[in-house]
Image (cartoon, rainbow, N blue to C red; front, side, top):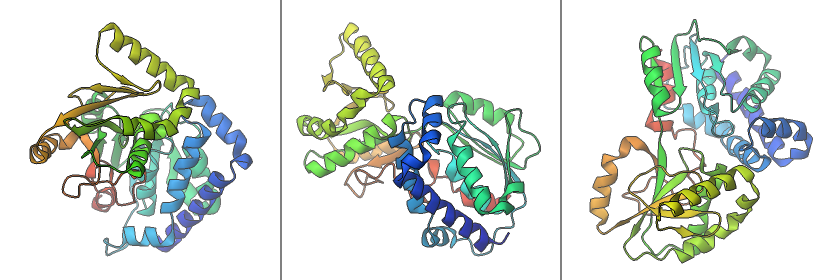
Length: 338
């Protein structure tokens, strides 16, 4: 297939993903099956992921994304993809990058996402049957590949680095996102920040798990904005985490700020448990900037309105562009290098 044919296929896929999000009643069985395998993948979260991909899979977006690569990809290699399963379609960017480059993919799905990603790739193969020889799935050991992209925890990354040391690779570890507040945020900015926290129940590396706030910061306006997400109280798995973490902290006599579905805890760590957001006070923005630079390898996004410090505006952490590469590693450049 030529590059323009691959682009056209993904544009058509984006249109079908948009239909799935806009007419979920037509896909009720799929959403029920997906939710049955993973209670974090409820219809609202899945439809949001589909909408985000539909927005990106347009002719213009794909062509602009590919434009810096002057020649058509040579392709022809096999890329092993060890897919994560913490969010709906979380591995789709790696799939897209591989296939749009003309490579084959050998996918190992996460046990947390055995349904949705396969369904989307089946749609792609119906749109463009010539993709069929390019796509393989395996439940066993990965064999006969030329490069690998593997995503997991810090512990699993150690195993990946050893196992794939003889292959060109991208190994992704744990990261999280933070927000830097100045204390003068408008209500709409705080509402957008709440989306950065609660989208996907806080399970993604682009979810805000830590707030840096000026000393004397008033949390009440933030809690007011967060109440729009009170529907998480209807989600059993989320509230089980809330109840467990609250009990542990209370038994340890840890001071908390609490609105009955989100806990705020002063803590120097970056990564907070589900239903908890850590916060830390700062006095000097320049000193904070230096501190965050020292933590660069652990941070995916810095949310906020300060252009010299923040990388993502409020409400946009879960709306990455095609060129917003995970961990800042250019996946297309990796594909071109094989």
